Image 1: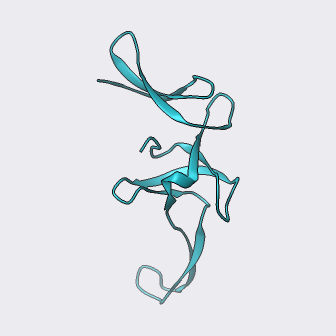
Image 2 (image 1 turned 45 degrees about the vertical axis):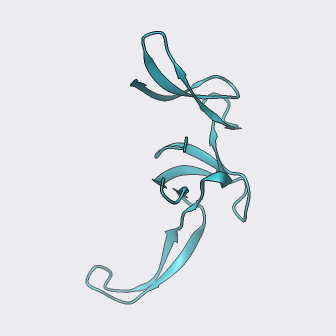
Image 3 (image 1 turned 90 degrees about the horizontal axis):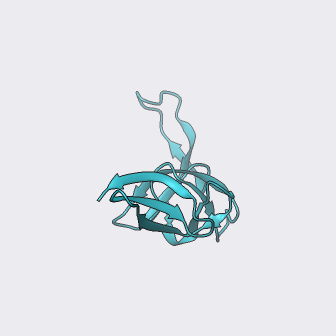
Length: 108
């Protein structure tokens, strides 16, 4: 999966189509992503020590990774993500549409 935590993504299908948000968590085993402010549901909880009042809590549930696309940092439009090796031997993620770096560089 090429989407990472703290990437900015856009939802491309479903009830939240067109909404952009920051990735909160990534589950590689289930191929799902939790995005801030997307797929929000109410969780009804009883009063407890942690939450003495109880009531309704808003919770973001995960969405399938195939339903989101990363936003290009340069053009702010949805794009696919690729990997390339630089001259000094390090790898980086880049936006396929504009060729801009996605900010992550590591040694291979």
